[in-house]
Length: 172
Image (cartoon, rainbow, N blue to C red; front, top):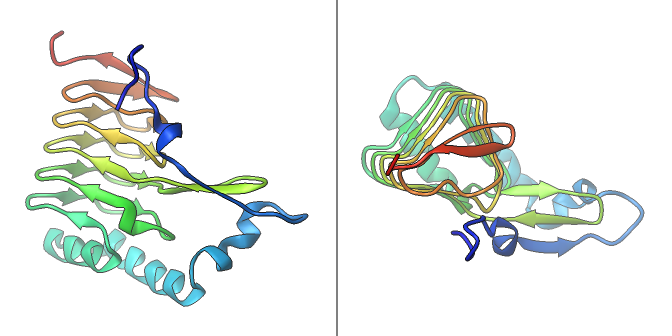
């Protein structure tokens, strides 16, 4: 999603929850999500990271609440958000590479933010990349290894770097 200038509006898609008090928002996580649910999520995330079978990984991701379309390939050691995995959508044929992290939350000083992460049809996220909450990676897009994706990646584009920037588009 982009505005008229072609820049991402990720910030507009984040839900913000204030966390009043003297401590930072991470101290409020038990109020945000039931601790037993987070513990179960943690176990399922561990299984999804290490089980060798793609079918078993996708099955485990679905138990977490991740939307997993047919043909998704989830790499070894890739990590879905442990608090809000239900905010992740992996569209048909998407590839999430080795050791990728898809985050759907940000704990800050006085608030925490949540947002959906969408990996589009046939999109590829390279090894070690980190995708922040509220980001949409378009169909047929590519994210280079070890990139930090803080803004949307348009369909057919290639993004690379920290922070990731579009380095080529479908029409180049």
